[in-house]
Image (tube, rainbow, N blue to C red; front, top):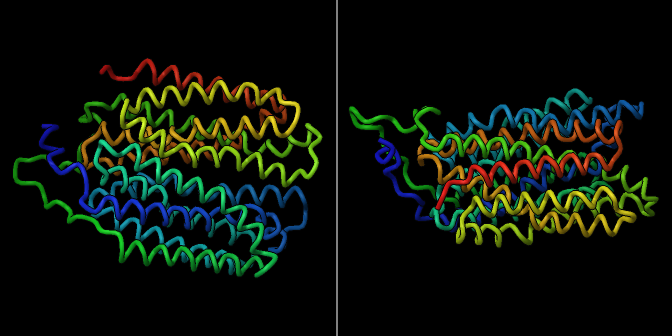
Length: 404
């Protein structure tokens, strides 16, 4: 029976301590993983690639490699976390990422760089693992707020990483920057190992009782809601990441001065908005329901994307991106909370792992599609297309939301 399958406490007694360890750990690992963005093309050149077109292609391959391998392995780590403990998965991820980041600093050619970025995605996944742990250990009534706090830490890492990556290489060198990143992730490994606590795993099922970890997809009562969240998670990241590659080119068309600086301001605006709004929207969702907040945030995002296609100067775009960040800050926490509420505790990690894979698929396909549409149909079409996509997701979640 479903009730028996979920007959375990809905939260861990150490959930608050674990939340803060996960927030700090996700922040530091995301910083370490994103600080290479400003100097990745320079590192590719340093590894012997001289043709400008090849530098761009290899930089894109190295950047996307981590998402590709992470998408393939996220469900596996989620399932193993259900079976052997989610703390163990975070220890594995933090130690694996520390080793992989340090090895990237030792790469001797561009092939090694791409393979090591694949290794980082294969062994890593601390932020996604932290999302699973927080979602499954936090009381259901507080899950939106807790996941919002974690999302703020993740977005803060995405904001700080490129800024730190622009400052460190001139001071310590590119290779030493990777070694420092590896050392910082190793500190996260130590904190996860010795500070984070997890309640003992439940023993084997009694004779005649179904093993919850082996629940199949057809046994999930709310599988339609879960499948909808997988689709929305993929389309959300597809839409958001389809815009990132074209922002700098879009600003060039607006005749922007200090191009790289202003591109950084525009890109950071959405992240800053998400940091400020994530926990507040999560708390609101805990109070009035996750489905209505999800639908409303998707609808507001769709509306705010439309004027971005018609701006006449960089500051208009920056303000609109910041406002859009306020709306998107509540999306991923709501998606994770809905999945957590819809599935038994013992398979929550596996289902959240599939959600993470869906997001990675969107992160891989989004930039490719955005670059193609922007190059062939104009930059405005990317904003309008993603607006239509978000509007469709808002309508879908509104129509499928369960009744009161």
